[in-house]
Amino acid sequence: MHPSPPDTASLDLDAYLARIGYRGALAATREVLDALHTAHAYSIPFENLDVLLGRPIRIDLAGVQAKLVTARRGGYCFEQNTLFVAALRRIGFKVTTLIARVRFHRSDIGPRTHMLSLVELPEGPFIADVGFGGPGLTQPIRLVEGESQAQAHDVVGLRREGDAWVLESRGREPWQDLYAFTLEEQFPVDYEVANHYTSTHPDSLFVSNVLAAISSPEARVTLRNRQLGVLRGGQVQWFELGDDELLDVLKTRFGLELPAGARLSCAGLNG
Image (cartoon, rainbow, N blue to C red; front, side, top):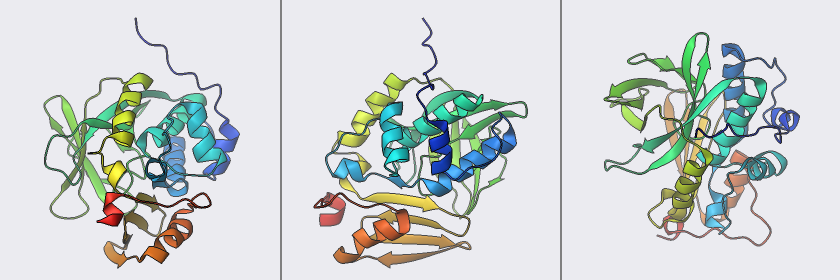
């Protein structure tokens, strides 16, 4: 039996659009997809703070809305893309949800722990992904092999490896693989399993590091523990943060405030 598509009726679309500052048309077109994707990427930060605070990461639509929209927090791929896909489907886009193996900054074979989506348009299929953080997509890209496709701060492309597609960043030499995926449809239960690993396993990047990222038309800002990177005009500036600066940077750069009395602790900060 083929699973039924997720229900998006509970999505407060107006609240979501206000959260990302989008006031344009609502139609299943390439122009609207591009505009929504960019508005989301520029408005909702990538972050994993709740993992480090010992809070469960809910990836059902109600939980994601409560956190990312109502509480104006950020999140990682399962949260971000669950929300984005729900909005796309509500507007009328045909979307297939996918999963990928992350290759960025690793040489071994990792588990399938990254959510992305395939959007069907009259112009052809597009990959949409608002939840990778760092060098992730700020705009959807065409599902075509070997084409350099410009993003806000770099260039990306896709290549084939058998049945898999590999997203690579072509902004700097050497090219970097970001992740590999197939076109097999995935369902909420698949992401629940992957999310459990991502948010609880001791080998997960998200369990042992403070991570945050946000893009704007002017710059891409990334945080890993005490290392703050600002990519602007093709050049990266790095800053080493002191203990008293970290919380301030989370607030001023990413719009993130910890609950009163909360403290961040993980191997990446304590090592």
